[in-house]
Image 1: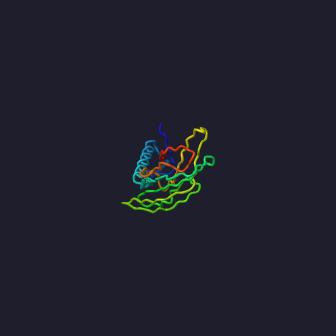
Image 2: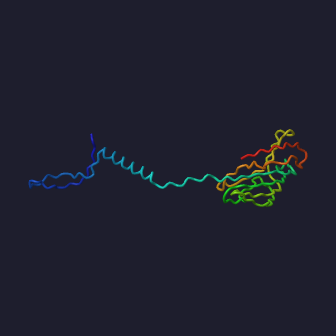
Length: 193
């Protein structure tokens, strides 16, 4: 059973024999299922072509890699109760292209002096070096006291929109002895990203 939708308009049509034809309904607005299917198919094809031909946004560039390194020269004070330690270190940042190295900061800084040691350029690579002296913060759990082992970290950060930090292992490390007393020292350097 086919359903039809017919408009309610009426009209008289001329009769070829000269007489008047009976009142008939106009056939405007009649839709069959096959017509609806064909129309939907046509709309689908048009939309598919529109999507294929539409301009696409440019693929996002991969994030800029910014290399950061640190050489810990000395630890002069370690205050486990207050969660602070004093350091003397050299830090650097390496990158390709345009970048503002001042965006890289020491995240666990309590009070830190950053002395500029200069910049270098080599075949597109840029390097900025600093001498860091001051106090850093850390978390030092005491649940194993007096047999606890503590790790002293220098944590760098960079806003995500400006790049991704990568540990620069070339030159990173620490001295074999520190000035801090009262602790057994294991010179083990572990970079984390």
